[in-house]
Amino acid sequence: GAGHLGKIHLKILKESSFTDLMGFYDINDEVRKQVTTSLGVKSFESLEELIQACDIVDIVTPTLSHFYCAQKAIVNGKHVFIEKPVTHTISEVKNLIKLANKHQVKAQVGHVERFNPAFKTASKEISKPKFIETHRLAQFNPRGTDVSVVLDLMIHDLDILLYVVNSPIKNIHASGVAVLSDTPDIANARIEFLNGCVANLTASRMSLKNMRKSRFFQKDSYISVDFLNKQFELICLEELKEPEPFVPVIDLGPKGKKKVVMQTEKSSETNPIEEELKSFVNSIHQNKSPEVDLISAQKVLQLAIEISEQITVGQN
Image (cartoon, rainbow, N blue to C red):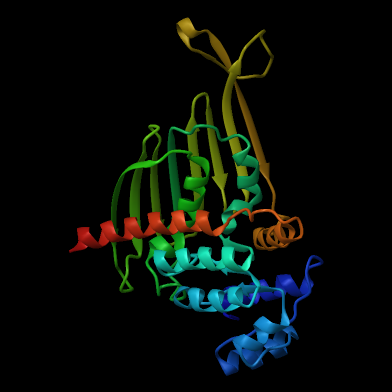
């Protein structure tokens, strides 16, 4: 696929040092000609020709065709990178898991926020969060409206949520509204876990500005991740052993005094898409499980579908 995101993948892979780009295929003849000219990348006349020419197939097509493309590549013994959401249905991703095991190939799914440098830093500090709040807001763009805002935007935060909260889900409460498209453009989900953690997620593609922020609250610390600006912030309480000049102190009464430690970090040099593609190639070289495998993607898709179904029931 050589649409908006496909072109970004092509540019990265063309300039990368970790793999050789053999070429691309797009179902649209005009797109193939345009991209071949603009990027100087070889185009193939069919998906089958592309699959035969390479070791890894990068699938950046509309969600409805993910399964078709991936299963064709896998049965030919090719490793596959699949953009999110992994497939349109749970049965499709289950079939891909079986095929990948049968043909002994690796597959990774493009939950790119796992590779955001701000989250990479934050994940080292996140431990047993009790409350999580996320806002993923975007200006309206017809691209991506073939699926609801849950599968288009919120799914990024659902992946992060399941990655940091190691507990089964207890309850889901969700609502949403379709404004300009046929599927919800604004959605909110409250997810309660058995370990007591609660997450409140909001996603909108009807916003006047873009925002991708998550906040994690846990004992003695608050962690903020700005995925859009790749900025990490940590505010935590630590034991005060002796007075320190210019360090804020909180008096907790009988519990004593604690110092407030603040840390901020911003990184704009790392490209998360490049990092996830590089990570996948490394997992093949090292024969390790990809960082975002099909089983992880299946759990995220299952949660996204449950949220979407609850919104549909609410609307009806």
